[in-house]
Length: 116
Image (cartoon, rainbow, N blue to C red):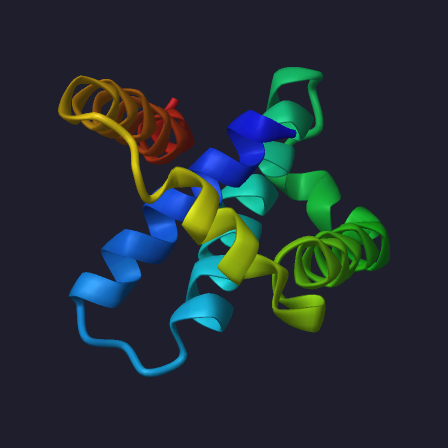
């Protein structure tokens, strides 16, 4: 869970730098979007192709909604995002650099694998 919280923290910081007013919700939706993309990539990996998406559309919509609702309760409900942000605020420069590199690779791979 700590890795998932750290990913949320990095997306939260990135969103905050963009000047977004609803930072916590934007970060939560960003996390949800990445996870939904990963689900699509897994579906593609196991052999579910685009032509079967129409048949699976209700299933995919339920999975996407479930991911968004779960992320809401993990990050936004009762201001839990504040605890997460405060827990990672004091990271060292080396830890910040390493974290930024890993998160950037994850995001790049998530978007890059769409085209395979």
